[in-house]
Length: 165
Image (cartoon, rainbow, N blue to C red; front, side, top):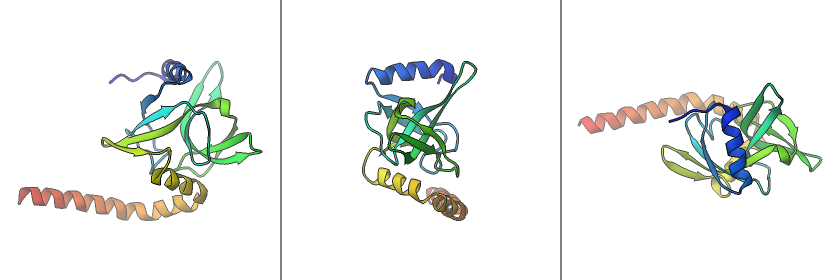
């Protein structure tokens, strides 16, 4: 696997999306937890339309010194022409941004080789609900995460137990 700094990678990504191509990238960081985790793979397409709840790749800073890109969710429209974004695991919004700051929109995500369509259907609706209920959703996640992790550890232990039996 080759890891490129964003100053080298993003011009290639931008050019591919401007040509109408789709791009796959590996997610790093935890700002989109629980919907995207470190190591998930996402497919990004050119953003012809933008909707509340869409996960978008946005250039947040553009200076000679630094370029910063984030993959966050559109959580609010401002005056119909601009929008705010927020990571699913974050409390505070960034923006406003205009559509020209968007490189692309996430359509599919893979975790452990299993695809999830984020463009429509259950995963898109779940993301939209998450965007609309924050910070309540984040508080509920913090309450339920320890029991979920315990359940996963118990499940793994039981799988190992039954393999040995």
